[in-house]
Image 1: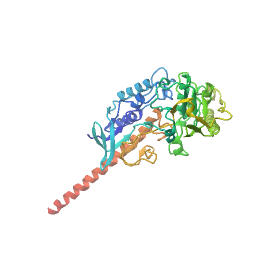
Image 2: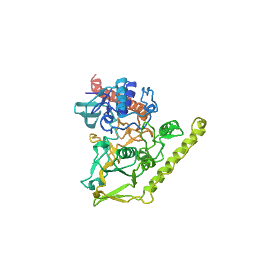
Image 3: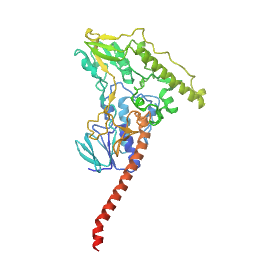
Length: 433
């Protein structure tokens, strides 16, 4: 089978690219290992909601039109939204088609699937950035008596053993799971490393509204001071709770969650924690206040001050005087460890030498280090918002334009080669005449 472009993945990023390719009349197919929005369907816990308000789910040619723009979609609602989008744009999706290999050829790429082989001139990788839970190597030293889980396998507290739970990681996933599990009646200890603290609401509006309006989310990858660091920052400590409450470390300690430092090791059955908890919390407070100050400055500059609540600042993160530096896992206080330590993509099927030493694709704003190959949906790929549903549209429009130019260049090159070959073939005959 042949087509101009193969898009791998029918989540919001792949579908946004499909819409933009269709707008340019570029023949393509979208290959999906499961159903549309497969990761949203199968790899999320039961209570999870989007961290962004409903109005922020903006895709090319498709926007939220419901009666709850400031609410936060549940996972079933998110799946339905993305599935409706695929139908609305007539995306050429082949579901239940697992890609097993992508390799480069002289004419482009060969994409091998369990349903056959595709040959194309360009490939768009939109298979997701959170396919595999990143579990640290030190997990191997955890005593066998301790059950372990990751966010990809966790569904709700009922599947956990009674007793204490150690949640490792305090980004968006970690704080949400710590909150939910503790409220289920299980004592929770949260191991905290670097984190990004923000309020859910600021001056009467969602923090995402401020970041969107003030252009924070539109910061481009080629404008970032330290792009490598920006791409590796933890996700904001946010939750899409219907009551719009903030879920930061202070909120967690107020309900009884115990804070410890970053998990540094497990030795002889004892978990060892870093002594940097206070410094990490202070740094997060400092960065939050810088963001709020920038928002206040923007509001004043644009004349918005009078239309919103006055500026406010939040209490510093409260850390106990001497947080524990170790925890004996053999004592039975902890029955389960949940590794909320991040995710990584799975490119085990990619047989093109474009991966760095950490297994991530080398790219320049989504233009991969292999001609005719593109990436969608990665953290801070072209903009700070690239990994959000709302970021897929702008990225897809720009990359589709680049891809179209690439295909046009290949057509011109191929035509020139045909003309050259044609001329070479005719010369002997012309000489004979």
